[in-house]
Length: 386
Image (cartoon, rainbow, N blue to C red; front, side, top):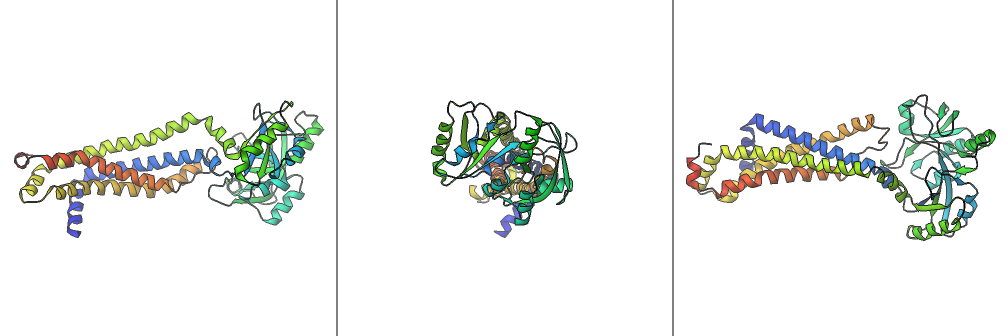
């Protein structure tokens, strides 16, 4: 076995430049494949981080239309609901337009109970709850701007015009890798009181209600109960699971996601063609050698093993190197695209998909040259001049 592997290794090195360039091509292709798959995963990160025991209630007409805060008590009375919170998308920017991040006005006493994946110390949670102008930021966001506990964070409103300032009372950590650590939260009461002073018709309204339920299998039934309560009202509701709510945003860009998925597989097909060309040239150059081996009594299995072994050696070497380089490449890409993809982690199944792609490339590229070499008459092979 060792001697056979040694023969394959030497065969790979007989054309160092060609083999090396092919390996480099596979490395680039596998990296591209893995990064594109990671982009797709990042697109669905919000949906993947959802809980089956959380519902979202919004205005049935459109998400931009608010709901009265008076709905809160009636929603709480629905059987099967364990907790109700609410939030408003604020849409503020930090100092300049380029410093945009998700910021929400929330109900502090219930929101973090409903979202245990946002991990805060009891001291931070208490400080936030007791400070009307307090705010909570994710670790990633705080690190990006160098914020510390006690810092005053100014935001310029877009949906709610004006200059707003908040005191950072806590920095949350994500309970899991897929938890978004780039959010900014502050008190809904602070927003609402300010709007009432301004005489705004946006006062006493929330963007969405966030609902915790006792049993995930009752999600559809509870959703229907909530919506029936507000049927034929001035602000009818649409209640759906948190995952369905998040997938609604993804569906707006579904064509882009599909295009990225197609491109990821096209990359593999292209490198497969390059690899097939490399193996065709290699086998053609060694036609006489393989004919000699057959004349000496070596069977088709041995010839096939030599050809497939060399092809798999090249493809797997490139594949493994590409997978290893994907992780630092993903970190750099994620840092540059953090505004678009707040969670950009290589999924656990991505390396296995990339490895399977490299294996398929190696096997497919060698199939036709190997078949031709095995079925070619010995006499024709011995007459070949390569």
